Image 1 (cartoon, rainbow, N blue to C red):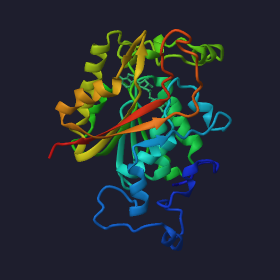
Image 2: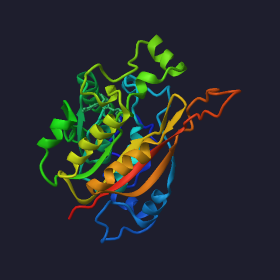
Image 3: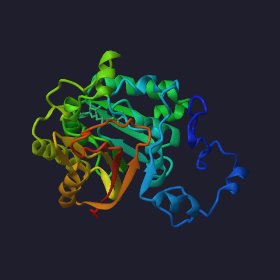
Length: 306
Ligand SMILES: C[S@@+](CC[C@H](N)C(=O)[O-])C[C@H]1O[C@@H](n2cnc3c(N)ncnc32)[C@H](O)[C@@H]1O
């Protein structure tokens, strides 16, 4: 990275793929860039560690000035993790879609990495915050101009994208209606600070569907629409978490992966994103095993169409 993140706080600021790195400094990059590499701009030494199946989630930390917008959303992902995926699955100048863009973490990562991002968001307030976020948190005017926020329902907006126009899709969808269910301290604290505890009251919001199987079908239908605009053999990364519904453990990552396979979105790998910063609650103690779920999964899928 980077085309210029405001304030130098991200661990990615040393990314050697940045255009800002002087020509001679590029010689200091470890490993060789293989001209046969059609996937990304990484050298061999940069590529290989990224294939490890466990990553530590990296956020900015609660005190960083840039978390002001981030914390307005109940479930953002870390733009630094997304930037890492974007650097692996795309080249500079490529086009990236996030069909559930929230407050624009994917677009911020695209702007910092010199990629062209398209984000779709249903909630007009989050769409507005996403635009504000890239304008205030990214310095380079050119890379901000390359980011587009489309407001509305992904079900209809994806249909407006051109065939084979996307190089990569990365997203984190609603995890069923768990924001309605969670009732622990974190939610109480958000309420006390007048922050959103769910995405919206809109009936087309996937986070408002009551039945789990209906939710899975609706989500699958949106990813099915993504196959046409995604170029053949290109990748999709979906960040999800398993969750509990009362005492039942729901393997959302596995349920979703199984629904996507018949669409030609074939599993190529699963990353565990370890959320070390999460607080531990004494769920179940002293009667039963109830997990503190401190990881997300990143489903890595490839568009099998020719
Ligand atoms: C897990 S959040 C994504 C957060 C995002 N990764 C970020 O860092 O801000 C899921 C988002 O999907 C949006 N959403 C729900 N249903 C939608 C739909 N039908 N079309 C578009 N967006 C939708 C919600 O408003 C919410 O912001």
